[in-house]
Length: 348
Ligand code: DAH
Image (cartoon, rainbow, N blue to C red):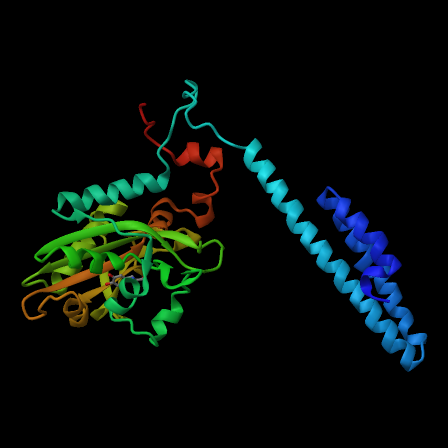
């Protein structure tokens, strides 16, 4: 007897085919394949049979089980697809509807922070540049002196684009360094802020998408002192503390040499974090002098220009400034939270 002619198949194929809701389908699945389901019970009877009988009957029941479970998953997929389509139709949002006068729009906290950072650096003569979020291996890694087998590639937990092995969602905004140097010659000062993606955990301090701030200064005589001054002044502005202390800690990034991390002082008395006071240190960002290989990759002579670069997580800076314990709050769109942290209604 083949699986299709087995009475169980005939009866249940029909029921599965005509089932029209997911819950009922799952009940059928449990009824057939669950711990005490029909098929499972049949399989348990095999033990009482002779070895020969067991062989034939076993193959038969397994075929029935496979056929039913394939059908169940196909039906499940079909019903899920229908349910999604229905949701998309009923939840469509008409964004052309007029504004409700009783509702004021707020700028999201991240939008405020991004705007603040941009205008701070603009005032210092930095140009704000943008780059693509879907980029490629070359701009995200190779050109930044991260060769194929470099461990830093593995650390980045990259999302690659399906069927396009060299295309990826950028894992950092350092790509902006290369994209800018391809079209612009030094001297230059740029920052770039944008979304980056990592196939990371989703918890209080990680989200698969977050924002980074990238900075690059390339001039004939740039040195580490300029870097430290630039970043310390930025931290003083950003956290609103005039006498923040800062220090460099040696670190490693393939695209800078030497590389460092910038710490600023803080206190953690009574479990309360305060930035810019006290004698503890808090890591803020990564930075360094642009590696000569990066310059050469962009056709720039490292003997003529040297520069510094830095990169920081914008959500992390925001959380430190506003004392937010959980990064997810920034993306949950809880109206109470949005009203609390949102400012400056947009006058439309
Ligand atoms: N791209 C680094 C990261 O995602 C951050 C970074 C570190 C950027 C040092 C820089 C730099 O420009 O100099 O972790």
